[in-house]
Image 1 (cartoon, rainbow, N blue to C red):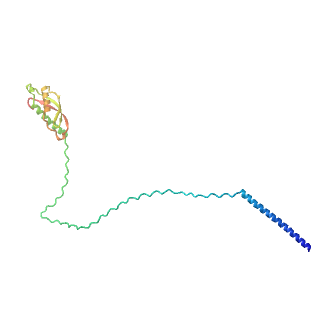
Image 2: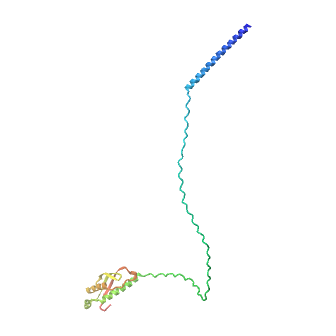
Length: 218
């Protein structure tokens, strides 16, 4: 019995020693683990938290002002209805005995074309009249000295004519008698000439006419 007790006590003591050693080992391992964690935290500090994100707010531009409203067009005023008036009765024409029936409308008068004016014929006729007027004036004032000398001849005289007035007369061809030439110029400048035709009123002409001096008259 004593040997069993001794064996049991020794076994207990052995178990106790082993447990103690294991406890020491566990504490050492825990201490090493704690120390390792502390060293790791010192070598790897916790990074600072990221800065807070600032939200960028974009403010839209102000909208353009609305267009001005179009001018209001006044509505046309409706005419005020007028009261209906009585329509007078249409008089019935009373038949008149022996009344003249209305004549049908006359056709429009178509103007006839005016005949074409022959200006050359009018000019020739007027020049002939003018020559006769000057010739009569010259014969009525036949120079006395030419009559005494029985001188005759034809003088051609050129002159300007404007509305019955003669100017700038000169001899184009002489009669070879000075008294006849001088008398022809005086007859042309002093003659009372007829007025021009209406077609030639206000115009200036240059005429050349012969003045004949004969002892037998015109």
